[in-house]
Length: 499
Image (cartoon, rainbow, N blue to C red; front, top):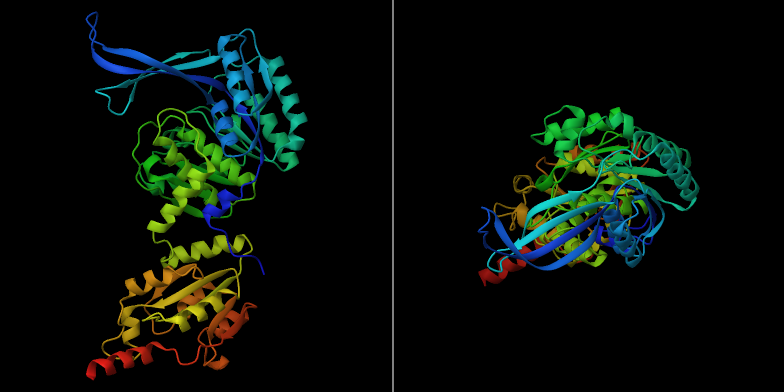
């Protein structure tokens, strides 16, 4: 029997040290901070009194820096000029323990520098005022392209995943990317791309494993105007099919991400509201975190949720900044503690079961009213959970309970309260309400591997047994704790009140 599915926090905690290659455009981000005090006397512009300057890695180097902060072993591939900007980039790469032996020099082109001016008004939270770019966007030369391909080919034997950070500055040429994707496919290495805005995606990215375009980029690439979730799914499906990818992903800023997988899965991953101070670096963080989780064996849904969380932490900061594993874990744990995720609709449950089965998980099902939760219930559910990897609990609605003839005042606790209490039990993974007299239709939908009922039932009387056994599953009659029942507790309470 497989171990219990890990929580998202546990996945982040156990990411290890994957070997990640980042290919793309290197950028140096410079930030000039100061107080925006008044309007200049020379022109109608804000006068910024600078008091601090800071330099950080940007572009593909930003992705590499974020990966290094998360604990990955990073190899960076790209091109720098021969100038002060390049020298500073290499200093920062060394400080962040990033292998840059595959960052080649091109004396004919300057290194890309983006200079941002950040102003504070009356000492309040700083805001970006303007940005000045120093760069050329011409494609790198053919000989340099060949040198990069040869270097990548030689280094891939020690790599778990390749991430492409394409800022359209000339390094990620179609010939280079086509060859890199081809080599990686031959070696069974995933390639995940953060693409450019516009352009011919088929010419550059065909055959990659996945990509993370935003709403605008995906719209331009597919010709689909993305204004709701359905259109996002259409764009993701178009990208997945036309580029022969495992999964098409569209990032939707405050609406999270939409994914369409090659195997037919269509899922929306919402995010919670954040205080957005600066979106700079959010896309880099999503790419880095997504790649990190996929490199260590994670599936797309869990990788996307973790990437959503990391991207959310990034937008709460000014500029390109790193996020640690501990910060992601803390945020995930807080989110799990404040968001009730175990109570799901029947459609959502079927979707989740399909995903879990694709990971080889075995599904256990039981059902009941669980009106007043007692120790007998808890021990019963713990025993049920030990029969497989995931425990699905079918919970009678209030109307369904009333039709069972337990009494006119039953249930004592309504379905929402009962679901909340049951959801607090670690042994319960999913709760789904059913309004029918029996859970038969829900069992048909779930198709569990193990059906659990109490030992007071005879096998021939258990609803759904035939369905489960016909699929090769089994029935398990769990031992009951003697003297423990909701009806007995209710009768005792009634008796004490009468006395």
